[in-house]
Length: 475
Ligand SMILES: [Zn+2]
Figure 1 (cartoon, helix red, strand yellow):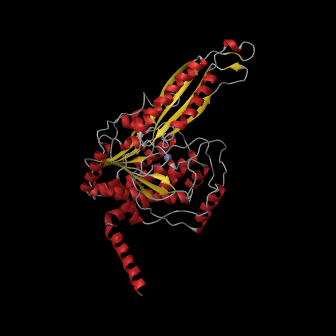
Figure 2: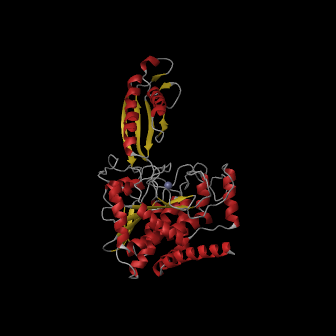
């Protein structure tokens, strides 16, 4: 009896906390997302099927820009010298609240909506990071806010940033460099995930660069003494990198991709090319490691008696977290509650887990509590990091794939084009819309978020780690 009354009491308390905060205005935001749901799913599925990659996402970008325009937002295309980058705006004055939308795919991950590996088009790209849902959900949130401004419920400006090439070139870095967030008070973003959480953990900073070696071609057997091998230099360089791995911080990562190691076996190669990436959660640890890896290219060139060229591709900052913002998002996640799945969706999730060698526990639709901000960061990197050093950023993760799904894999593509992905996407749209609404309605929240941003940023002066114009294919 006593047990029952305690449980009843706990139930009532929970109910009360939720009931008192799901305001009429928030219900209106949720209703707006529901109204656009079918169209948002259509856009997401079209982007999923198109699977356009870095700086070539012209139809995907246009699908989003066009829907923003049809819904009364003003669209500026081709910002920051990037044809597929755009801004959709509505309203005037402050606060200015923005939301990020990505839409680029990854090479080689084409997949049908079935829970075992089955490419739609062998070797073609696929949305292995769920960015088809990313852009559509964020646009849904922006339009929901636009409708509240239009109705006179709130005042201010909403901006949707169409941000291309997150996967390969980190397109946002050029957009930040162009000052596109200079007038924004707070930015909101999300990322497809395998659990629901207001994301208050940082990502890894990184530097990306290319090293090219130039030697002298010769017959590999008849007169090899006349040759100076660019591929020898490449091998010596990667050997140096691999010896160095023992001495880097456990948090750091070095990756390389051999792009050109010579063409045939009977020619001493006069050209080789290597793409190198160095990462760490802290830029102050990353930078000296990067300088050392960069310097080794010269050592390799000396040993092989060849010339070398170093070119910076780009670099990104670790994400500056905002816990005050995370709390606002967390409150809205608790208001929305968990995502529930049908028996078919659970079976689909378990089949993916079976196919990828994971425990068959199915979907995780629960709302997770706020994590410790200063705990170890997630393993990935994102150009949202650069945005977060220029404007306070609130981040969200929402389930679009079963627990433990290998990311950047066919399994994410398999979920992103069917109901599991659709549910997560619509949920993210509502959570971001509600959080943006809070910022419009309560200037004190904006001040709190800004104050934390200022403290965390300290006296760091942001300098974009890029060198020149964005590498648009064909330009
Ligand atoms: Zn991603």
